[in-house]
Length: 135
Length: 305
Image 1 (spheres, one colour):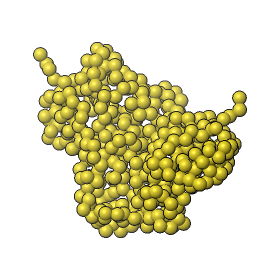
Image 2: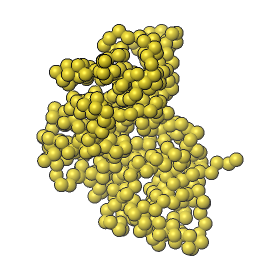
Image 3: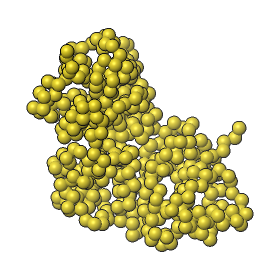
Image 4: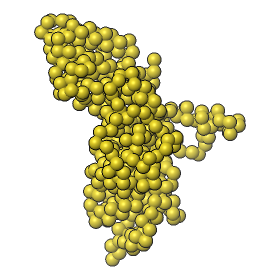
């Protein structure tokens, strides 16, 4: 059986989730490998969520937030940007390929961008293979 | 009838500091010894494993296990003590989170043997010892990953105030003796913490001049903001930033600290912010100095390429 990546996507309520909604309403195609989890803000995403996902079988974690300057809570996405950077460094030291964690800015109008980046990410993780096997 | 509590103390994979830390309560130790019978303590008295095996199941009131589980022997004794004791207590950071020796989980067993026995300048004609030694487990384990643990006494080793509170509680059958606050709450430098910290440069404690303010405000990583209080800030009082031996308040201190420290970094300029984060050396060793065995219970992932 071919490998189907499991990807957890944390999407912020105001931009990325709305972008994913738009992709759906616009009937854009993207792979069904992502499991979207709505959070109020990308700044709400604790590194623990990301590690928890990896520990429990995720092959990749996608984080979607508002573009810089657009955060509904003014600067939650800036917090997210720094946390993701430091979390990537941690993953690297843990021996997990940092490419398995991806941060993207997707606005509520960018349904097309959402479909594109998710498709790319799923393809990238497919190339990397399952994380479980690399323990 | 003798109604003294029977206690046991075992030394697993650790430095021995935990055994010594009992002396940290000073003269209170004499009161303690008046209240208990020590039935097993290999570090201090001559007991054999057979003695422990002969005891009735559940006959020990409180068994303290210090040190982590690195060998098959550690694991067997942990299971044996669990059977013999009514209460099993993980004593010290090694038993709880793996502590400094847990950093070995960043390497495989083969890599460790290679560095220690085979390709080491100070061990010529290296050989891995194999006879009559308990098996060295593939990764270091914490006590609660092997047996059920009733309470935890954190610290490396448990500081006297924590230990005193813990012993008082345990001898009275209670297990709620830990603070649920972060170390900042009892930090002597608390008043020098600005309302808003913006780290513009990460400094290392040993190579920068300490101006006596909150370490994080100086750009020195201090784990106090995510670490459980109770030690009365022993290290900070000695002008050393907290490294997190007491563990997290809720969950792992390292993850909470990564989240918090990242958000304290000055984020006005994306390029600068990248540089600051890049300059944090050794993320696992800084934030998970005491909990790598919890972070990587089965060792490092092999997912580089």
